Length: 332
Image 1 (cartoon, rainbow, N blue to C red):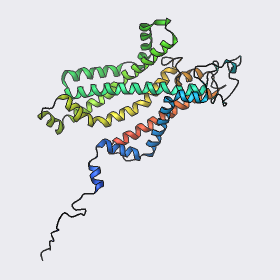
Image 2 (cartoon, rainbow, N blue to C red):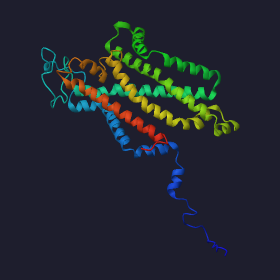
Image 3 (cartoon, one colour):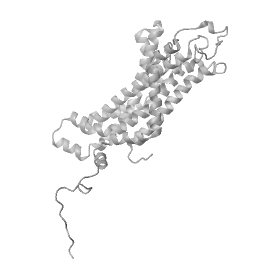
């Protein structure tokens, strides 16, 4: 018996002719949008984003927060310090976190201003290292030839250099060029600030460049790159429109994981005396000065330590969440 076929008049409004809206939306989304959607569904990532935003707000509005308390990070209250250099008052309505031993500066004002150098140094170093590493890796992997050999040699050279030795020597060299031992403290602090960013960025771009170069060497063998070459597209168009969108995931993951590392590096180098220095109100400067008062005034030490630990832990968890979101094989 032959099956009966009934011809429908007009387009059928059911699911046979019209694909579901959800399927159409999913099919039309790019991998980056899908990764961001996975990231928004991650509760840990959203909590980390909120905490990082809070630290950024503290750094941006540090003058307003210090003015709300009514104190300044540079004003000294010697009347609140005894003959041995210890504070005579604790946390109060006038000094929310107390005052600094020996100098009597307000700890709350120093803490909110201390978030600025850590975020600025880490953010600037991450930005410079990401841009330089991305450009160098893309050019080396796509152009190849002598350019690839030179960039690869530079990457190997940078990765073989002693990081700590350069961190110690760079501020001394810049200070000798800009003013020497007679430079005022403000200029010394500025030179150390710039040199720290340069050192971190210089040693940070090579790892990303090697990663990007490997990705580009794999991508340029695909059919869409061959099609772009057949169409005669210029190299700049191929790099920006064809290769760069496929490099978003590794670059974002690398930047998100580098940011907390730079914050730790800034605090560690400052603690060792080769990073930031007075009068910059850095958390690392405070930790270095508080190591002799940790028993008499624990709050002096633990406030910047808590700030560094919370910020680094939050950024590390956020970096892991970003990596998982951009990896389609990972399900959280």
